[in-house]
Every structure is written in structure tokens, then in C-alpha cells.
Image (tube, rainbow, N blue to C red):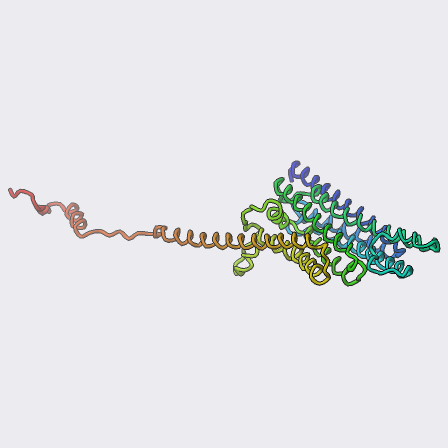
Amino acid sequence: MSCAAKIVKTIMASQALLVRLIYAIHASIGVIIAASLTKNNKLYFFQLFLLVSAAEYIWTIKKSKKGEWKWLLPSVVLYIAWLVPQIFILEYSAMAKGKDILREFNQTTSECRTDLSGLSSLGNSLNISKRSDEEYHDTVLQLNVLLQQSMMLVFILGRWLGPKGSLTREQLSQLLLAYVGMAADMLEFITETLTIPRVACDEIFVTIVMVLWSWSLLQFTLGLTATKQSKTRVVGTAKAQQEGCNVVHGMSSFFLWCCGGEIWALLVSVIMQDGPYLVMRLYLLIKLHEVGQIFFTIKNGILFCLQLYRFAIVVGVVANSKNKEKDTKTEENLEEDPPYEIASVSKQEQAQDLSSSLPGVVEENKPGDAIP
């Protein structure tokens, strides 16, 4: 290995280590917050992810040539598995505490996610323990929202500072723009949905919202797919590309069709974010009559339709390109010369060659020659 290659390898290893340190610090803060507020010391077992993350770092540096894997980012997978359970625990803890406080004041449990500090004005009989419960509830909610927002920033920062792999600078800039848009949509979904009174205190609704939100987070674990998605979300004029498919003999044409970069990105976006978000918001609007979701539902519906429209265009482009390739190959096969040619010699040429090779043979008079 040359000196320049060693320097590049060292820089990539340093970038990968820095990103994993950021992930580890932020996830550890989340574990400490959840364990201290819920007084559950068993949550510290999540710190075993430190060892798993270290092993993943060593394995990635040794096996990957460019400091990261092409299609999947294992470090982001570990980070999500490390921190998201803490967000779940804090959300359930705040919901349970809010229900208990409102039940003591004979208030409706449809307001359990709101700021409960104003309940102290209901009477002078409020004791210190109830005040501490209110403060606990509000603190848990605030810290949980802070963890969610900072998590999105860590995703963007980690992708920016980490090894670029096979991405160009243009692709990285598009990827970061896509990350910003995705993070904004995710925060908007979980924040606006969990502040709805009929959702905030229903454990089933809270679980569904949190699961859908966690499912959409897995988009950050994808590699080059997110680059194609950035062209769809931000630019929207990228041509369909077929890179990334390792064509193997016997592979089905359907798999090769799905392997197109932009087609795969559109499917990921619809399945992991736009589709589930739209279904949830339509349910809130139609079934629960939450008129506050009209704007978000219409916006989500328009984006979903645009994704499907783009999908149809890309599929048509891919199909036309494949048909053109087949026609071109057929024309090339027809225009190719045969490997060998059979020379056809006329009888007259054979006779001339024979007469020239035998001396004393008088050539026959050609038509039109004068007779001596």
C-alpha cells in the first residue's frame, strides 16, 4: 500500500470513528436521561451497545474499502436501536404520569400531554408531591422532544462528517438536503400527532404513531438509495439509472427492473414514510374528525401522488430504454458481416486463367475483333 493510500485510509478511519463517537455520546445521554427519570437502572444495560459499536467499527474499517458499506449503514442501525427505546420509555412514562395527575383532579384524560403546571391554580390543597409529579411530567415531555429533535440533527451531522464512500460532492449535498427534508417531515408527524388530545392518552394510538415514526427512521440506514431519493424529493428531474445491479445469469427480469436506483428510492419513500403517514392522517381526519390535520393530510396526499406519478414516469423510461437496447442489438447483429466469404469465380475467368498458364494456346477472338 502506497503512502497516499495509507493517508486516505487513516482519514476515513478517523471520520468513521468521529461519527460513531457522536452516536455513542448522544445515545448514552438518552440512556442516562431515561434511567434517571424513570429510576430504572436496568436501562443502563443498553450501554452494552458501546462494545457492539466498537466491534462494528473495527469490522467496517477492515472489510470496507471506502470506510462505509454501499447499501446499508450498520452504525446508524445500532444508533437507532440504542436510542429509540429510550424515547419510547420516556413517552410511555409521561403518558402514565399525566393520566394519574389528571385523575386526581377529576379532569378528563384527553389532555394528558399538555403542560400540567397550570393545575396548581385549581386549589390551595395541592401538596408538594403533586407539584413534583407535574414537574416530572413536564420535564419528561420536554426532554423527550429534545431527544427527538437532536436525533435528527445527529443524523444529518453524522452523514456530513462521516466517510463519503463512493458518493461525489454533488451527491453528498443532495443527500444532506434530502436528510433535512426527511427529518422535518418526521418531526412534524410525531409532534403534531402526539399533541392531539384523543391520541396523546390512548396507549394504542401512541404505540402506532411511535412505531410508524421508528419505521421511517430506518431510511437513514440506507446508503446510495438515499442519494437517488434526494433527486426525487429535492430536484425531481434526475434520469433513471440502472447502476447498483449486479447482473447474474438467470436473474429474473422483475428483479432487474426493481433494481433501478430511482425506482428503488421511490418505493422506499412510499413504503417507509409517505404511505404510512398518509394512512394515519386520513384516519385521524375521517374517523376522529381532527380538522387540525387537514393541511398535513392534503400536503401528505399531494406528495404521495407526486411520488406515484414520478414512479410511473421512471418505469416508462426504464421500459423504453430496454426496448431501445434490444432494437439496437438486433440492428447490430443484422449489419455485421459474415465471418467468412465464399469467393465465386465465373467460368470465363477460369478459362482465362487456364489459357494464360498454358503456352501455345491461341486465345479465342472476342466478338467484334477483325479477322486477319
